[in-house]
Image 1 (spheres, rainbow, N blue to C red):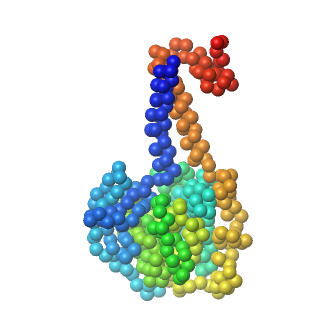
Image 2 (image 1 turned 120 degrees about the horizontal axis):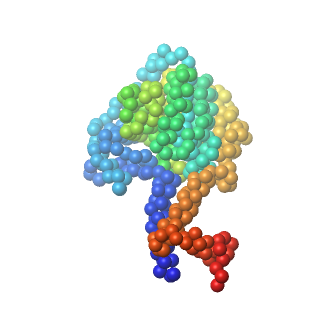
Length: 392
């Protein structure tokens, strides 16, 4: 009997060992490191990197991925030269043909949140920390008289099919005639310091721009990203971290002026993340609509009175924050955001059950009398609460 129990425990241990890495990967995502040919680390990014991907560093140096190691999650890059920065004067005449001062926002990975501020890195409910970021960006854009179409839909689970599910949201936004569309995300790297910056004396997080290279609009999307970065570099140095041009398409083939924005990472301070939205809204307004740098008299008056953002913005401690903010705040007290954990537990329980069945069949030479053995074993494990109590 002891030999059989040891065999059962070994079987279950092996099955759990196979399961847990998958659960961990689903929770944290993949973190890749970009390395130069001479072994210098350039950056980390929380997405799969493929051969042929490109990377524009903060100093506009262009790199191309020439080798990948899926086991180590490392990619070797080759320097290709410099991307040309675009003068801010270009944007004064760029958008004269736009019919409406309108942009679209949505969040493909609608579970993304911040451990500092939301209490969890992922919130599997209707409103997550990343929606707070988008809502605050929306408020700052509206302060500049930009109409914002904000799709608050959820596209769970957070997997490879999320972009397929969010495609309908972007399609609907395109139909409403925006000048540009932004998919709002946060990164998944475990080092918050890689995103920390100071702009105009204020601590905040940097913004990473992502472009998909597997679509007909790839060059236009990349050009748009470079325009955003050029304006940010000239107006608010240090705000834009870099640009990653990855293998996917991110639904960007639906519109040339579309880009994915990553605000900090899951371990960033959420207050610092929200602080960056004010400056990014200014960059968007200047880039897309040729607007002047700075803020309206309304925003200036609020800042002078210590209000952190325009009315309706989602900011920590703001009495004007909309009620939806409270939905994401509940994760800090454990009222939501735990469904991913329960799914993992359900899988583990399922594996345990299957393990007992497999062990019982193998160890006893077939299914004969197996039901009685299961009842007896259940009774022994649970002290007679479940199953059939043995006579002796």
